[in-house]
Image (tube, rainbow, N blue to C red; front, side):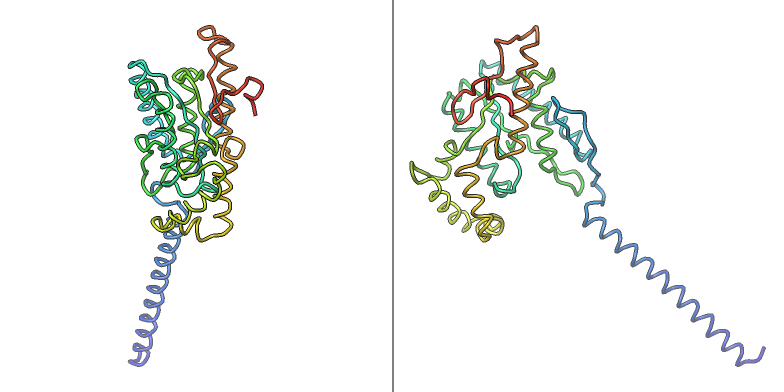
Length: 285
């Protein structure tokens, strides 16, 4: 082989090596890109596809299976807390509060409202005579798992398990309370004939101290309108899928109690809506 031929062969070998290295680098970049997309779409470590769970009194759920141990632990903690409160002679109430952020604003604000209603209800009946459980209580907040945060499905599954009880009789609760706009009037500083205007004023005040609320509600005219309408007119089982499920679970519990030898038809779970007892014909939706 002549010297020029050797030089040419060396150049070809180096070019081929550079091409192979380039292909490997491109493959590494492509893999990194795909992994990054997986993380953005929720397929990284800690993420899991939703799996259907055994029904809770006829209500079916698909939840992120990674949260199942945390949900089971939280349910056990709530039941233990209820047992402790009941041992002090207290009645136990379940407070339904609309879940989801479509109309109700950021989660932090909904938790504030739930805490307010819990205190209002306990003050109405006497804090030494009643203990109110509300699923949004910070005390029983579900933890993050890896890169995943619990969503409304996980919280709703947790809440209905607590409500149904170990025997599907709601045996730990004496009554369930479903709020209406009247119950939230004091939270918004509303007076008779001033409810919607008071909620508008609240939106303005809140926007000045809560950037998330400002972005999600106050600065979006349609979202702002829906927020005012939701809390001023609509809030309740008819306008919330989670509250409607809780309502129907209560109806199922009462059918189970009526057929139960340990309880019977005279020990049905009392339901209150807008501060008034719910009559039997209205128990199912």
